[in-house]
Length: 90
Image (cartoon, rainbow, N blue to C red):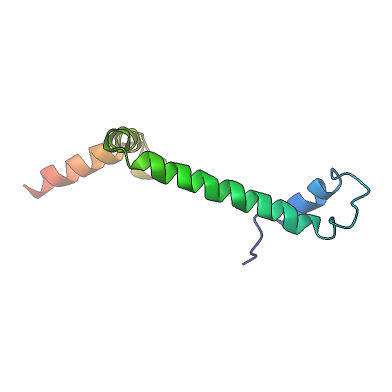
């Protein structure tokens, strides 16, 4: 498994878009782009954690996820499947 987010195929396309000349700091453009991606992911994760500290927002997100139909559940919602499983036990 590669530690890179950007695979070789994507990198070959991105590399052509980078400006020249790179100067002394442009020795490893791929590592720089990967670092930028990591910073963005890290910041996004921190914002999500901060948002999840709010119980009301957490309830809204859980409701949206539990009421969205899933192909793997035969286009039923997780809430419907869970409810059916509870009723079948009684």
